Length: 319
Length: 269
Image 1 (cartoon, rainbow over the protein chains, first blue to last red):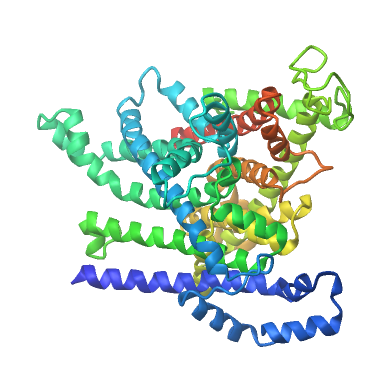
Image 2: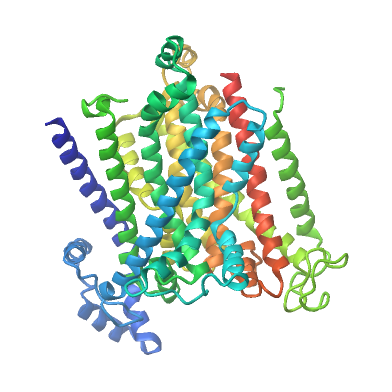
C-alpha cells in the first residue's frame, strides 16, 4: 500500500517538476521568439511584415495561452515547425533522439560495469601503499575533457586502426551492431571522467558504512571483512549510489552534446548545436525540454528503485 | 598554520606553475600568437617553437599561453559570480528559512534538472552565441544554484549552535552574525566547492568553445584551438596533445587542491 502511495506521490512530483522545467524553457525562448518572425523574413523584414507574420504564427497572444498550446502539442507529438529546415520538429528529432538514447544507455552501462568493481576494490585497499597514487590517478581522470579523449580515440581507432570510419555513422535500423560499435568509442570518452567520480563516491560511501556498529558486530562474531563487505555493506551503500548514478545520467546527456560533435554522430546534441547557431528556436526548445525531461525522469526512477531497496524509505523515514 | 598534506602541496605547486605561465603569457609570449610564419608550417616541437607550429606556422606555445589565460580568466569570473551570488542566497535562505527558502529551493531543484552545459547553452542562445562576456554571464548564472545549495546547508546547520546563540543574546544583529560569526566557519565547505566549481567552469567553457558557441576568434581559447587541432590531428598531433594537455593539467592541479582541502577538513573534524 505504502509503495503505491509513495510511487503516486513521486510521479505527481515528477509531473510538477516537468511543468516548471518546460515553463522555464518556454519563457526563456519567448523572450527572444519575437525575433523568430524576423529570422524567417531575413533581409526582407519590415515592421509591418514582422507584425503580420507574428499574428499568423500566433506570437501576438498572451504567454500563458501559447505555453498551454505548446505543452498540449508536446504531449500529442506536435512540436511545431523548424525555422531553418522547414519541416515538423518531431520528424527532425525522432531519429536523432534514438541515436542519443543509444549513446546514453551505452555510456551508462559502461560506467556502471567499470566503476562498481573499481570502487569496491578502492575501498578495500583504502590506506594501502598505492592509495595515494590511485587517488591522484582518479583526480587526473576527472580532469580529462571527454572531447579531448574523443579526438585521441578517433585518431587511434579510425585513422590508424580503421575500426570505424569517422563521419560515416551506420544506420541504426539496418546496421545495429555497426552503429553500436561506432557509439562505443564515444561512450568511452564520456565514461572516463564519470567512472572516476563514481569510484570516488562509492569509495567514500563504503568506507563510511564500514565504520558503523553493525560492521563491528559482524566482524567481532567471526565474519571475515570480505564477507561483511559483500554480504551487508554493499547493500546498504547502494541507496546513495543509485541516486548518484541518476545524476550521472544527467551528465551523460551533457557529455553527449559535445561528444556527438567530436565523433560526428547524428544525434540530438549535434542538432541542438546547429540549431543554436541557426537561431532555430522551436528545435532548440524542443530538444532542451526533451533532455531535461529525460534527466528528471532518471531522478524519479532512481527514487523509486531506492524505495524498493530500502525499507526505511518505504516506511516514510529519512534514511 | 595547519600542515599542508601531499595533495595540497602537489596541487598548489602545479597550479602555481601554470598561473605563473599564464601571468607571463599575459604580458609576453615568445611570438605574437596570431602571427603567421613564426616558424616553418606544421613543425613539431623544437627549441624555437616549444609546442611546434600549426598549418599557418603560428607558434602553438604562444597560442596555448593566451588561450589558457582566457580560459583561466573566464573560469575565475564564473566562479566569482557563482560563489558570491550563491553564498548570499544560500546564507539568507539557510539562516532565515521560511517561505522564501521553500520557494527558492524548489526553483533551484527545477534548475538542476538541466545539466549545466545544457542550461548554459540555453542562456547563450538567448543572449547570443560567440561572445566571451555572454559565456561568463551564462556559466555564472548556471553555477549559482550549486553554490547556493552548499552554503544553505552550512548556514542552516550553524544557525542554532551555541556561539551563534550567545552572539544573538549579546545583541549582535543578523548581518554581523552572518558575516562575522557564521561565514568564517563555512570556509571548510566553501573552499572545496570553489575548486570544484572552477574545474567545472574550465571544462564547460572549453566544451562550449569547442562547439563554436563559446569564445570565438579573435579571442584565443583552448576549446576552440582543440576544434582546429582535431582537423589536423594526423599532420600535427602535438597541437591537440599540447592544448588538451594544458586543460588537463589546469583542472588536475586545482582538483588536487580540492582533494587536499577536503582531506584536511576531515582531519580537523
